[in-house]
Image 1 (cartoon, rainbow, N blue to C red):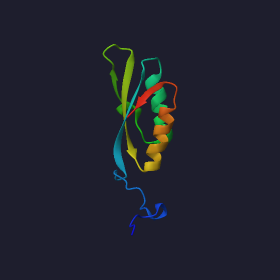
Image 2 (cartoon, helix red, strand yellow):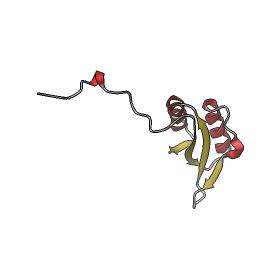
Image 3 (spheres, rainbow, N blue to C red):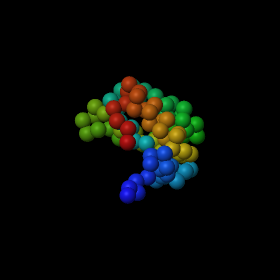
Length: 97
């Protein structure tokens, strides 16, 4: 006798993150003019209370790339998904963690 649970009876996905919370977004891209400003504008579309002055910037050892950390006040998984989609699809962005 099978005890497998049918897919429609599966519990909702468990959130490992409790909202609201401070959530760091790590973004890397080529070091070009306006990279940090452009990324701050993208982040602010989804987290209007994000203060660009709090953005941390770290150039790569070769100086070719720039790593940014934008810590936002995340209010939902949907918000995080939306900002990740916008950042990962942006032409200036190489990676988002």
